[in-house]
View 1 (cartoon, rainbow, N blue to C red):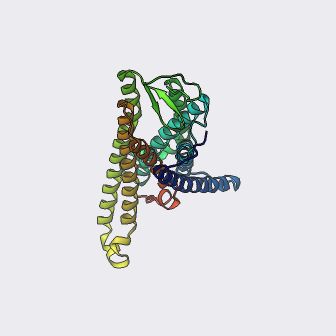
View 2: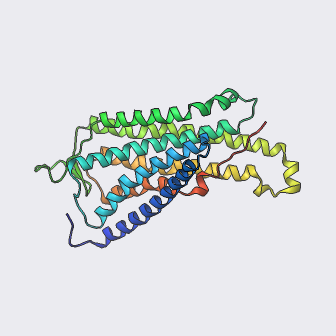
Length: 302
């Protein structure tokens, strides 16, 4: 269903969603093409490449299931999905978002194990960990697909709806409000993984930064002669670690807080909903840049 008139607010939001979605799709699809080329050339897949491949797939699902519908809605196409289509879109978004959060945390921990000294507590995992990466990711795909299918999707398509006043309208779908316990449970399940994985990422990142700093101090005399301190490998690796964890924590924290507000309060404000959707696309879009995800530290200390 297409609205004949689009106001300036919807036009601005539509252009923002279109720009963010286009950049995210092009970036993630280029990464998928890169992995496809590696696969066709029978390239020996490392654990790091396997993690990044699944991260790219998860981020692509988030952008496709959230960016495209919101863009079409902003440009005036209302309720263009059936009841099943609405549920499928939200299910895809939840699975993709959950996997994106988990795999990003796994990537940070894997990097921590990789660059740890051989005499550290990670010594055993450094040798055995890569063998379980693929199994762990596959298990989480299955787990999140099952969990998100069991948890009820309280979606009511506009086409199939009856006259109800207690209903939330999101443009391309709508659903009925439920009791505060149900909405609070959904909000908790949505926010809890972000809190847990954010804490793990912060811990892992702080450990890596401290490790890189100590290693830099030990070889400071070498760097002072040959390389500028700002351009040494440890400094560059630290910057990339901070960019990754800062981007993850910032965007997912803001997105979770806004989702928490939307889930609990029945009176929706249009700019809160639009801002929440825009922020939810920021991390998958930023991570589509190869310069960020493929230049994380690869140092290995003896």
